[in-house]
Image 1 (tube, rainbow, N blue to C red):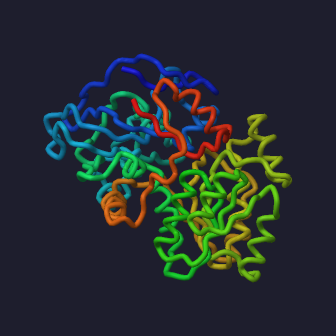
Image 2: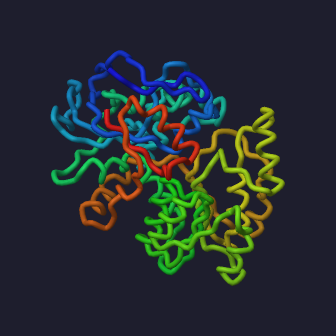
Image 3: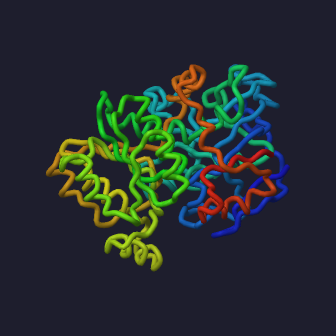
Length: 389
């Protein structure tokens, strides 16, 4: 079959690889009908995620038709059309039973590797390094889904791939980021990053009752899309974000701040941003957390900082004194997608949101490597790429 594979920094290829097969009785094999390039996939392209191996199949946003089912899988049948969560979960362990599926104790076969870096291991993820299980990803013609009686959700008749594909990751992630903000109604939410996840967070914040959303980015097309959802926008190359949020909130700060950027924040003129880039370039640091620092400073006393951007290692110069003295709450996670699927599918069915608004580019798998670069370089108005195997 054809699949997109990682061969080093800046090197994604469309290769011919062996077809997946059933390896456990709870598995299923999915013929992929649609898959997408996620912003976090760009961290793979840029070589900042450790333990990738040449030839690894990438991608964690996919859906398609069930073509084979393991003998113990009683949930799915051949012919079912399903969306596959990017988080892999057994459904039976301590964390799965609590609904914290992304903390699954069983789904990362390389948990000892993750424990050395993070103290404890999260669950496995599709197509996202051997640190997180070494699972083949979904930017392929077929994908093996472990624990397929827990993860995939069957798509009702009448919904298109475009409407439901993003249930695999970016819609639940953006929604979770907004849910973390403890929105009761009337709040001002500031969101850093107007990429696909940020766009979902903007709309989710409004769905949950926020009165105002302040969206921060610098890419014109992203800012236009954010304004179309009702957000007020700030271009961080044009204004001082802290000063502007102070003005917009009469000096109080935002009720909650969402970091939808993560480890590879774009450079600004600030000293800390420049220092971050020097440290990561010289292997003296693992991440560039400028946005997280700014979100902390912009959040009101006893507000919430919600982190849904990907970080991998040890963050420098975090203003923890600000956080503790002002009573901030931090909430963050790899999204336990399975927990959100029924709720968000219902919102789509009811017409409360159509996540397909974020799609700007469509391509074949063969065109995928070039679209990775287009997305990374923010060219051609690219915000979200959907690939059709």
